[in-house]
Every structure is written in C-alpha cells, then in structure tokens.
Image (cartoon, rainbow, N blue to C red; front, side, top):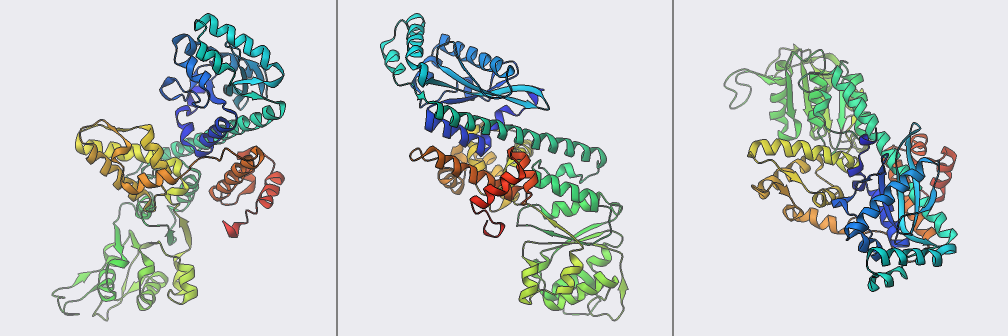
Length: 516
C-alpha cells in the first residue's frame, strides 16, 4: 500500500514544500520521507540534504556517510512504528532525529522525520559521539570536526515547535493522499459507467473542484433541462457541453455549436433560425438554421452573454415554446432541441444592469454549472501536462518529458488563459525543444519565467517563529476555504482540527467570505 503514496509529487504541493523550507530556515533541520520499509522516498537525485546544514552535506557526499543516512531513515521508521505520535531518537552518527508516523486507516505507510540537530540537554555528549564517528569514518577530518560545533542545538521549546511543523507536514500528506485516492476511485467508477466518445474521462482532472463537477454532470446528463455553464475563457466549457450530449439519450442525434459573439445580430438570427430565399441580399436559397438542424439533438450556445436584447426575446420564445420563425418567413416552425448555454460573463450582474433579460436568465439556468479556473485546481496541472505531452509527442514523432524544475515553474504560474493556455504552452515547448527528449525551463515563455521568479518567494527567516507559523496557518486556511467553497466541516477534517477550532481561527485571522 505504501507504493500508492505519491512520494515524488509531495514537493509539488506548495504547503508541503514551504513547511519543509520553514523547518530548514528556522532550525537548519532536514525533513525527509520514508516508506514502510524505511527507504528514503521523494528524495531528488537520491541525495537530498539541507544546504543550511553543512554536516548533512558532508556525510552525504561520502559513500559511507550516505549509507549511514539511509540507516538513519530505517531507524526513524522503526521508531515511528512503535508510537502513535512524535518520537525523539538518535541516528548512527550521533545526531538527533524526530519522527512522526504516516498512517491511513491504521495502516503504517512510513514516516516524516527531521534530523541533523542536537538536543540542548545532551549536546556535549552528542558532539563527543559525532567527533568519534568522524575520527573512525573520515580520518579525523578537521574541517568536519569544526562543523560539528555549528550543528543546531534545540531547546525543549524548539522541539515542540519542530514537532508541530513535522506533524503539519504529515497532515498535508494525509489530506493530499486522501483527496487523490478519492478522486481516482470516482473517476474510475465514472469511466465504467460512461464509456462513450466524450466520456468524463476526457475531462482531465482529479482535484476536488473537478470531482464535484463530475458528480453534477453524472446527475444531469440524461436530463432534458437547460444547462447554463459558467467559466472563464479556456476552462473547457464546450468540452463539458459535449460530455453532456454524448452521455445523454440524444447522443445519436446532432450536436451543434454556435458562438453568439462571432456574429452580428442579423447574421446570428439567420444562423440560429435559418432564412428563406430573398430574405436579404445574398439569400439566394432557403437555409436551415441551427435549431432545425439540431432537431432531436443538442444545441450549444456559446458566449450567450454577447446577444442583444431583441435576440434574447427570440431565444426566450424558443426555450419556452419550442417554436421559431426563419428570417423572411411567416411560417412558424417547431423544434425538439436541448439547449446548453455558456458564458464567461456575470449574467446576474448584467440582469441588474439591464443588459440581459431576467426571464431568459432564469430560463437558461435551470441547471447551473461552474467550471473552476486552472489556478484553483493546480494539482491537475501534472495530469494535463502528461495528456498534452502525449498528444504533441505523437504529432512530432519525438517523445518528451518535462523535468521537475520546469513543472515547478508551471505550477507557480497563475494561468489566466486556463487549460487552453496550458495546452498552447505545452505545444510551444514541444516545438522549441525539437528533438531534445527533456523539456527544461529555458524553453518556457517569458511571462511564466517572470511569474516563477516572483511567486512563492519563501518565508522570512527573522522575527518570531510563532508569527511565521501563524502566517502559514492563515494561508493554509484561506486556500482551503476557497478550495472547499467555505465548507468548514470538510476543511476541518482535512486539517485535522475540530470544526469549532477552525471557526475560531477563521475569526482570529478575519477570513470573512466577503473579503477573500
């Protein structure tokens, strides 16, 4: 079961990465992961060390030292299996180790541990042990013996803070793993039920916002109700409309799309309702409109917010009565079409401003779906990248992969153009990389490079530790509230605190829903 943990992905999650950074900055302590067998996991290049702790660097650079680090990992794991909480012990070199077990459903999966420090009460004794270790294994290296004097010494208060931080890392791992496992199970189940051309598996994403969207789609795809799809440009509103059509009873009939913002009023009326010969200059023959062409199927009205008030009146009649009149004709026609509409505009505000009809708005939003922007589901970016890489690699004939540094920069970008922007960026990377098998940050567009420099600059390393912890706590709660749409019970469970405790912290930090 330990192999199911996404060890290599943990440092892609900002909270985990920044917690490790905070521990390193404050205590010069290295935070590591081990699996249930005691093997180091999620370790870049197999030799991850804290650059702020020269002793860790020195012993890792030697074969014997690195072997002892691996023995430390095994010992930390053994210590964790014997306790339900944090365990303070010593490694083979003589430095102290603080480990916290990772358990899911009472199953031990490994541990998170910090090492490379001394305990205040036993610091002198530990230095003697470490010096002896250096004499035996490093021929009494004088430079390394000097480094021993620089090892961080933690008081009881420091150890309490360190324990709290490592437990927060474990909490983030458990919350992340639970979310990913639940998402995978739901996607697998949906794919079993919906195996058609535009099944929900084509809508890539395992994040909580996408899982909520999948559940709604599953409930409404076979309905005849009108659906209004809200979302920013590039989020995949048309893909959702296709999923609704091809997973409905209408899937044998036509699926038609019209972009309401691409035509002026007269042309849009002709496009939707058709026209008769001679209705206007250039109308040399009768033409069926989209409503007639899509009879028995589905019509997707994209950018519905761009229509004029007079066009909205005509659309309302079709939605209410199912009838329409071609341009230049007096004959009323009847159609059997399911209407799906999409917009990136705030129709509710437009209704208040008098630029969109209230009756049409409520007729359209019988079912209201909102597609989350990519910045609110960044855990889906690696999945989307793999999908687009495979697509463009097939086109070019050159298989490619993206290195960790490039992925890090992509995760830090805000993606104002959403999934469409990510797809375009991936295609650009594949083209610029040419025959190179690995895509590096050098190929990234300038705006992503700039954002990566300015985003997540790291924690301050001066001031009080309590203040730094509160900053992190506030940010985690704020991000969690947005992600769970202010579901405090759900977030409290993710964070491992009581709902009452979360409410108190929300009030403490002034995280009012209206201000975020």
